[in-house]
Length: 121
Image 1 (cartoon, rainbow, N blue to C red):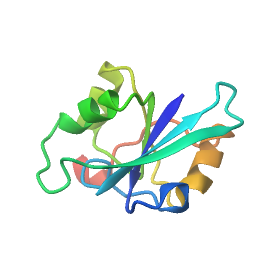
Image 2 (cartoon, helix red, strand yellow):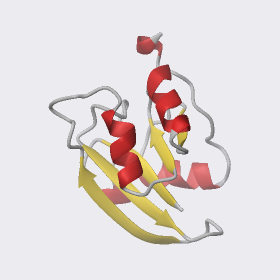
Image 3 (cartoon, rainbow, N blue to C red):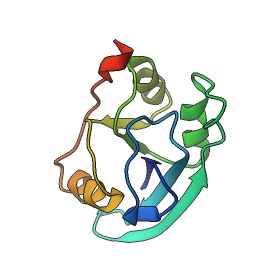
Image 4 (cartoon, one colour):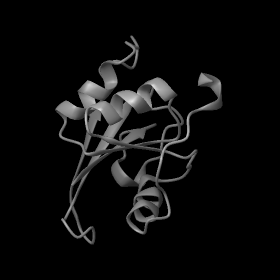
């Protein structure tokens, strides 16, 4: 399984989750072994839409990176719907911290579901 994180920096799992998925400078892609116990690979990619946000483009970009899950501090209801339409689980709960902390919480089942950002209501 590949999990994409909206990232404030390019520090991999030691870096921090971004508050908003579409306007973050990077995405960190974490490949997890099937049973969720082992990280197989970590890759950081630049957000091609960071300086020129194009509504609806980021979900397709994340899909092109092979992710099945997208975790961000927040995203609007339209983006959540777009992710769902293309088969990507959107996880947005206002979580803060390092990607490693959030990854472990997700794998333990402590973080799930999507709540829209208040700024998008």
